[in-house]
Length: 262
Image (tube, rainbow, N blue to C red; front, side):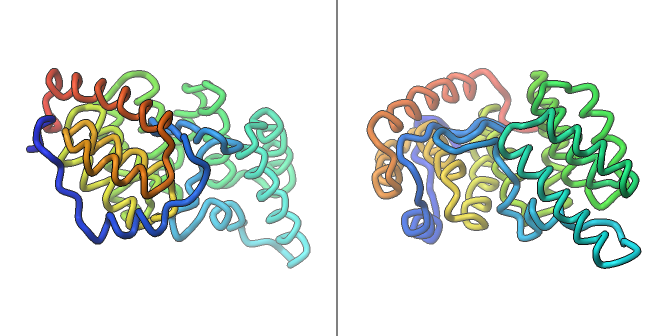
C-alpha cells in the first residue's frame, strides 16, 4: 500500500499522454464525484465512454417510420442538452412529453433519474435507477446509485455501486474517475491509482481526471511529480494551491480510514 510519505510511481507512458493531451482552461480545481468543472457550462457528462452520452441519448426505440424516429432522436438530444445546461425542470417536462409521444423507455428513465439526482431529489432518482437494473442502462444506473450514496455520505455503499458500474462498462472513463476519487477520499491510494490511471489513458484530454491524478500525487507525498504534471498541463499557481489544500485533507483521511474495502 502507498503511504502519504512515499512517492507515488506513475507510469511514464501515462505521464506522456497527460502532458501531450491535457488542454483547457487553467486554474480548475479537482473534481469530487460529479462536481462540475470550473469554467465549464453544465454538469459533467459521461462523454468519454466510446458509447457517449449523445449516442446513448439518441438510441431511440424502434419507430414505425423514419420521420418519427428522427423526431424522437432530436427530442432526446434536446433533453440531453437541457440537462447539460442545468435546465433540469425543463428537461423533466420534455421527458414527460416524450413519454406521451413514444411511451416510456429505459433511456427516458435514465435521463429523468439523472436530472432528478442533480436537483437533489435523491429518492425519486434512486427509484428510477433501481428500475434500470435489467436494462441496457444498468451500468449508468449503478453509477447514479453510487453518486447518490456518496451524496448521502454512505462511502462503502457508494464504492460498491461504482465498482459495479466499472465492471459493467470497463471503458467508461467517467465511471473510473468517480471510483478513483472515491478510493482517494477513503485513503486507498493504490486502488485510486489503478482507476485514475486507466481513466486518464481512456480520456487523455479530460482535465478532471488529470486534476484527480495531481491530487493523488500530492496526497501520496510526490509533490515534485505533481508540480511537474500541473505545469505541463497548464494548471496555474492558484489552481495548484487549491489542489495542495485539498490533498492535505486526503492525507488526514488516509490516517483515519482503512485502505481496503470491507
